[in-house]
Length: 332
Image (tube, rainbow, N blue to C red; front, side, top):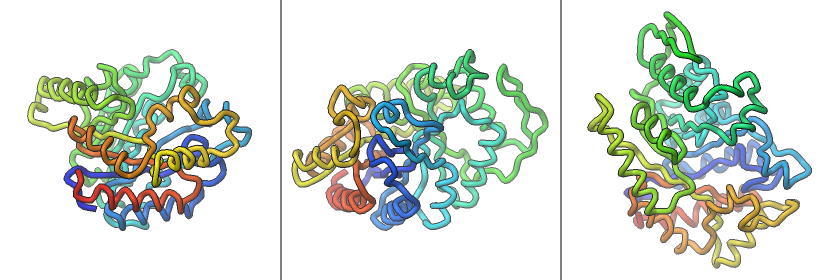
């Protein structure tokens, strides 16, 4: 696939009950999608993270979903691919100990030949964070994010690293190997001003899923302005990565049927107002409709787009991937 803007796709490592049937995703599905994406010319594979069942999935299904750890899954798939990149979209950074995470990500970058982008996010509601990490329930997660990001950069660059923050403290740590990429790209998700400020200070990219094309353009402009104001970063460009949940078929009606069939057994049909965190981000229709929607965001400043497909099987995912690879060829 030849496009001026990289086109990526998603792996269903933590998407059962949201885009794929409960109990359907297995090793073969993950491997087939990864290898097909590379063969079709997709730029990167995006993996997300849940440490426990997503509340919307818990409310809609009796059976639990399988959630495959993103970093371990990347290690498995990087050994079976050659060129395609991997982006965590996103790992919940406040749930990860920074010394351990720095070693895991650096190791992945070295063993994959420099194909890792660390996509990070704050996570869901504060009460959900408190349920998982009760020991940190009273901590400001934004402050945790900033300290963790600064600590990661220290560990990836210095011969010996030290950091003294309110929540992260270590001294004289020697951690090798360092990442192949310098800097290893860090992307962040979110729309708050504090997120944009952290990207301007620490990051190389911004991940969006919710905003309109006009809103993306405005946030991009603000992000560029913020970055110019950070000492030493004035000339740095920030990537704008836009994610779409997609159901593509011959017609809108067929695409909507495919969407519903991808979530069998749900207590409530996946329509607007229910599982809105996914549905509000969904684009369903024929290939031309998907292309037109994606093109609007590219015109607004998106420098990478990611299509994550509703599907009831690996075969259905592969068919949509191939359709959109042909549809977007030379179109962006």
